Image (cartoon, rainbow, N blue to C red; front, side, top):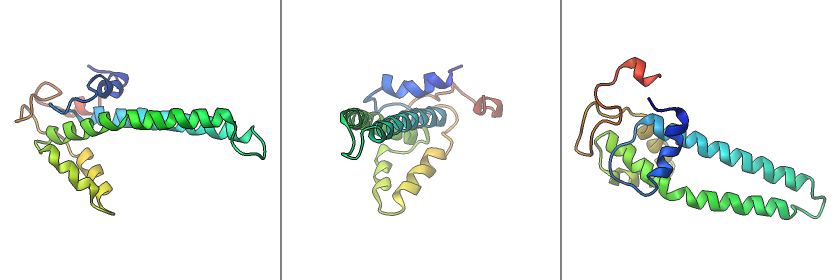
Length: 141
């Protein structure tokens, strides 16, 4: 059984791997991990900006901002690969990712796709990430 930390870091181990399948838990734990990093970076930025005086943000805040931008750019490929593997888990082509670029409703479509349960057992993109038949207690474990 995988721990939440394993699920959160697995996309980094498969950085640019667009093959195979990823379960919902992997996607959501990875998303939570990223949001926690962004929150910590924002807090550090504003703490540094608050302590720098009326001249504006100090050097510390700009370093934190640069680290945040680098993290954002570094996470682009793993997020793209994770989205495609989530689509594969539902037996959908990775090209469905283009639906997320529809103005106004694309984000909603993306969230819905990330919430849909994957197919049981193997499909054309690989074996089931949970190794077969899923039961309710495995989903919430």
